[in-house]
Image (cartoon, rainbow, N blue to C red):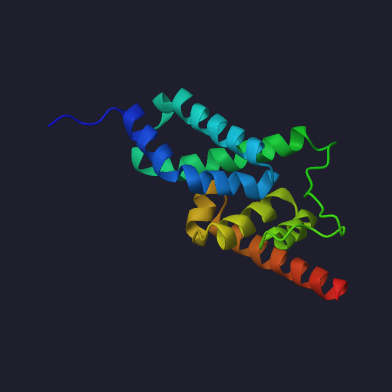
Length: 159
């Protein structure tokens, strides 16, 4: 029986996770076209460096890691621009559910924001987050709880 080509395996993983990767990228950049560009760039990076993949069973983790890093790179490049949300005629944000929570995340540093997004928006376990972000599990836990305290204080301050 023939083993599938690594490019085919990667392509299948990209297709199976495209919606999740798009949502992940969108949570960072909050723009449809930019999110699609980030997912496409992340997929291209993974395919471009497929010869360096030593453990194909971690393709999903690599895909998430590359998507997060590509989104963060995008934000760094566009830091001088405001990647904001459209306002309705009344001056309030359009009703998109989690958008207020996403705005709150802007007070966090990049790594803490990534942990919160992966944990609560992407429903990833802490060990998966540690793998995706290439961090120690205890560091992920510490940053998570610190970020939650920061967000709680900010919410209380805005009340």
